[in-house]
Length: 229
Figure 1 (tube, one colour):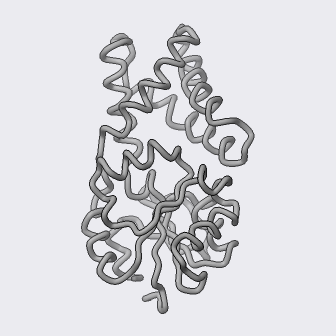
Figure 2: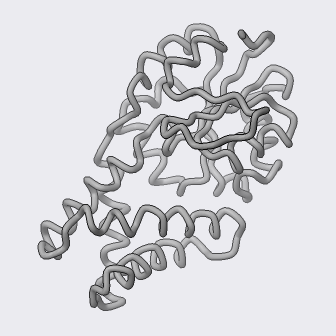
Figure 3: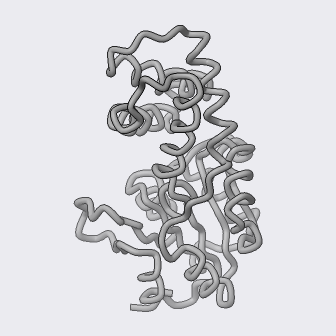
């Protein structure tokens, strides 16, 4: 099934194009090698990944601040490991992590190929809840910045996905209409349902083949977008 009348394709960044999990693990690996070599990175990531996801959900709905997110995800992870670390060390690690994270540039398999394919047919854009300065570095360092006409982040919009105001902000910036736009992202709630509730089409990027509602169209690999666009 090909979508008709689409002119603007909006992508989420983390976990959709940019391989957050792999790049995050590499950033922590650099930090632990320098300051906490006794910590096994696999043990830490096992605790950190779900905690980080839960913290982002709190941040998404304004239940914690940017600063609280950066502290809490680390503090809770070390507590889960029963590893003693000072607050000062956690705050320093939070700074180091943000510094090192954009230095890694692993993308999902097929990302460049699908962007090349879509770029010749559509206007491409990004909508992200990530922190603006970090997201811009990720996009530039992974050399995908030239593909996107606009980048909307939650800081400039003043709200986060799935709030409809961020989608409206993105459309306004792109000079696009709802009926000619589609959203592609890995989060059912913020990317896909948020876009659908706002009134634009959406595709669920689902590489882990998670359960989904029957009415949601999913792809397991980015190159599957060729079947729809």
